[in-house]
Image 1 (cartoon, rainbow, N blue to C red):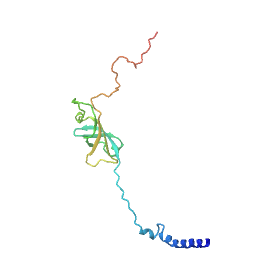
Image 2: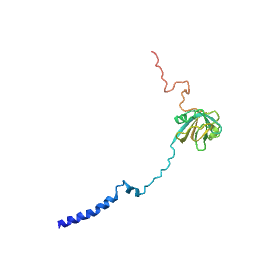
Image 3: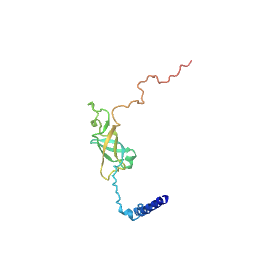
Image 4: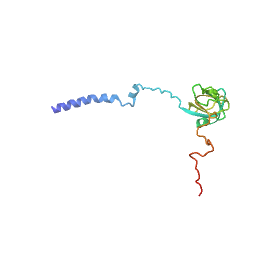
Length: 169
């Protein structure tokens, strides 16, 4: 019986051998029969970076740029007028006009300002056109408030931090 089982196994493997040869390994003409799947790549949104403009403010939301961060300098915005959309910007200003509200009316023409805005990386100034940015933050550096911790002493009297020389004997 072992001879009969061995002969049956040999016959079965002989029948499977031609079908395995026809299946192919993905190379050659058998690969042409299969439909190739194509993937559609989605376009990525451009990376946004923060632009920090420093300059002087003029009335309808325009800043004449005098300096800025690397994105501003490389984009050629220094010396140009940049139009700003200040509708959703956080304003860091002093209440100059005394109406109890800190708004864009407190920023006067000629004030030195610092503006933070986000735009696509590599944004450059267009020839003859002023650029428009949606500002995220406007800081008025010329405001009437005096910053905390100024270097001037409040009075002429020595305080706790003054060093007093001991009396000579």
